[in-house]
Image (cartoon, rainbow, N blue to C red; front, side, top):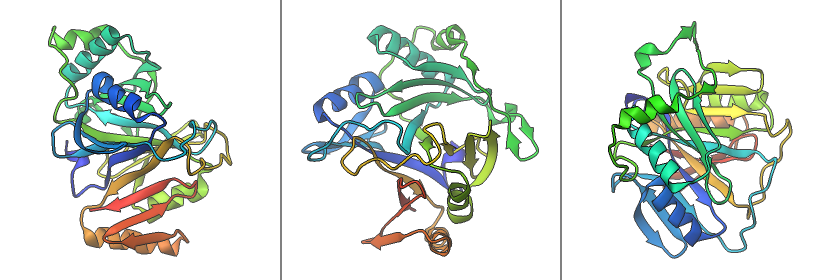
Length: 283
């Protein structure tokens, strides 16, 4: 998983606000296959390996339903170690009769799409070997075609699904944004990501280390889409990991130069992108 390790800058975890904690926890354990790393009241940190937090769910007071046509989370994406693991997930979801929103072949990866009980989008995917990715100069070639699900299922060879495998990581995050000019400036000039694909004029994919994307950005909810209300179900923030403290400090200074507010208390650095999406800056 070298694309999701230092010295790259990458997304490591997401923190979600949910409307019904018990319902969400059951979904994330039984359908997605997470284990609970720690739980206090109506908040749980979820893991696959018993050490690394990937998703945190929390039911705040006075939470309301996820609002439509807003900026913020489109989906977060869990990257499985192998295609075999993806086959086991497909069989498990078929047996669970949980509704899927799609199953796609993106050339660089094969992906399933579904949503949690609050409508937070989830992608579960496996990468094709990076040696097979095609590049046009600095842009990676991606598309959306139907997945050959039978071929992926066949990879599992009857192996049983036993939850998400330990090697699962947060592969990427895909966000609804309100516009591209300031957004591109924030993520590229500020945080230090590089553009690897411009997709149809309405989506932008960025990464470090020549990954196909650590972050996707789109205007599919409309240019000018407002940020969700503070008490709306959805994503509270996501975490970007920098290679070291110096790299983070440099990013903080660049963000401040661009006019972005950055707070740092007790070693926790937070900022917001131009669409109002909160980001934790970690090392």
